Length: 305
Image (cartoon, rainbow, N blue to C red):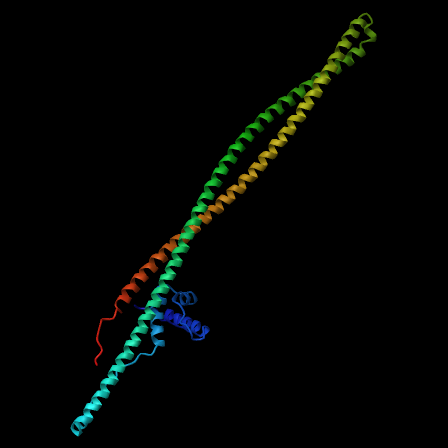
């Protein structure tokens, strides 16, 4: 597989740094190198396989050539030399077998690390799905609460309109009573001014005056009642307006929380989609690695005696 040279260098530098940090005791995991180098799991696993192979010593088979002069010198010497050559070849083969076993163990370690990394990503994806479900439930609850608040707001608006209508009626009645009082006072003044010139009608004027006074007292009482009603209506109107303002404030807060919840939901969905892509990619990488490891299954061969 072709790996960009810059990515390869970053993986090698990260692997060497982590190996030095461990005191050159344990090889760093693929997940740790990938995180430190900031590359994808596929590139990290390929380059790490090469790096681990470079850290192990691979024995090369020893080429043994029997010179013709030695064959001619002595058959016994040739036999002994040939036996020594076979022993050397066997040792070389055993060393190669040991190197192959080490490389297979390294491949198995890589496979285990990739499997653990995949399980971690899968757990993180499931946690994000649970978080997304919680956010969707919170969003539904917020929408339901907003609907309730909107219903309460409409009811308060209806109450406000009714109170405003009552308040307007009371104000109109109050104005009418005030005009009537003004008219009565003017009429009473005219009666007082005509008192001297209307001696003959004095008794009737006095009676009319008394009646007007009674009406005046009655109108004053009605005016007081109207004023009290107006004050009560104004207080109720103020309370309604305060409740409306509070409801509008709660509605604004709920709308803001709803917008934030929607934004968070979109972010979680985006992250979940990204993790799904990463999980699929890592699953493909794991399958590719399994196929690669299957190629290293050793055939059953007998060593020469």
